[in-house]
Image 1 (tube, rainbow, N blue to C red):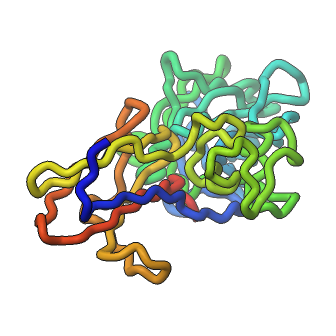
Image 2: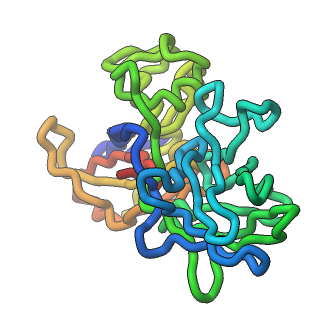
Length: 291
């Protein structure tokens, strides 16, 4: 890897705080879905019991004036994803990249299917707007957006952190299967140089050393700095710069703003920089729709 002597790159994960299970994550203004055979469905419900769209699964209720309450699930038995194979383990999952799948249920309406073949219900990680359709055998298609209204979420719920290690329980269950393997502070389960908390911030795998937010190439050509780093589809990125790498360095945005990851395992961006300028860069992973 060729790096100009005045050019250094630093990779860091953005420190994110896991929010506890709370009230609805649905926007108070934009909260209505619509189906021709069911009418309007309010995802905010009564606020306290309204829909909660999480980083890995959904909970709470939506309200239909014609059909009553419809549950999105009460929490998966394994702590992070519904199997939808058991009477006590059904609900709507979120793959972290915006796609919703699984089943909701209402006593007066039956099962509502969230599937990615035809309806393709999803939430935009950029602005929280939901689109696509849900399907109910008794009521047909229900659209999450139309020309008059749409459902929008204000945040993605990270879930509780019952062991207080700074890592949400659902993420620990997804990655390690328990709450005892991963820890806060400087603990580094896979000994890859990135602590467990840093792996969560970047959504990389904390028990696989090859999975980490990593600068894989940094080089300078003429007056252009070219950086390549690993990415995950569940995170956005910010490239920041500073004239020095001291502890109190004034880091500022490079001018690229928040970056959507490329579809490939890595992304590359270029910055024009005068040859006489010393410049340090760092990349931060940003959780979508974080509080």
